[in-house]
Length: 115
Image 1: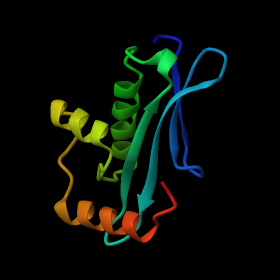
Image 2 (image 1 turned 120 degrees about the vertical axis):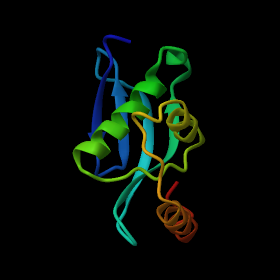
Image 3 (image 1 turned 45 degrees about the horizontal axis):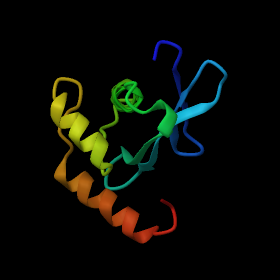
């Protein structure tokens, strides 16, 4: 796990975990909700099978919340993994506003081919 680095590919909507060779070994797919308020909305967390059990998904979730805090933007998690991670780490993951969660779900329904 120590050789993993994380980068934000905002244009593609992915927070990626890269191994020492620069290969993507895990990612959180997300979008940026702009209305009714701005939020980062993680939809899927994926870790390549050969890299499961190494803490990559947790590192990605933690970095998503760090990134959001740095941008002063809340996270409205729809990804089941990120929801569970946030429940286990309330000191790092503020509870999402229900209105933002509802708006994120509406956005996702309105863009069915996006994820």
